[in-house]
Length: 245
Image (cartoon, rainbow, N blue to C red):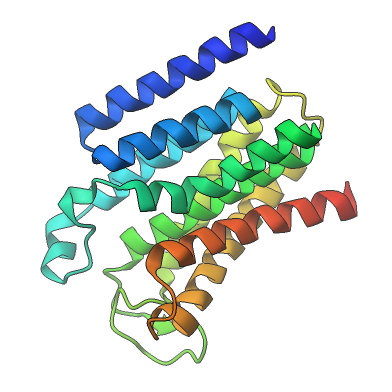
């Protein structure tokens, strides 16, 4: 596919994202603006397949947010405004993919960039599903000392959340594998599958550790923790590529 066609697909996907998000209420006004910036950066400096994976995460994350929303709202565990994300949430989950795309544009390293972008999105999906689905599991323990804590506590982990986290990472890994052949990536598909799944799950644990150590003490906000967790995913993927591929 020639570069012009790639760019047309990229712009089309961004417009589609804007329309879908507005209709479904997935993003508020600031979220739409941030999503447009992230979407164009990721797709034009990276590849439109990256944006496809990011949009898939947004859709799945929104569905997970609406799952038992009233029950979560009663426990004050639900996202505000029916889960409509703002610019902070968009940048926290998609900002690292944007930075990777810019690095790819400057350094022309499509292989590790693709792996890093997919890994960062995998962390975001893993953490979102763990939080939204695992927040109602009463069998929650602090990831640091394994003491029992209320469901939805920052840094808490539960059996339900752990499996949900794995499911989110696995979903992004499957998408990453299915779209890899469209890009210039020649990493073995099984490697992409295993790396993106494992890093996504590990990044979710990084998020929980940061939440327990810093967010609960007011030293970091939720979005900062999310951003650092997705950044850890990208860095783990880059390290793996440089060390083993």
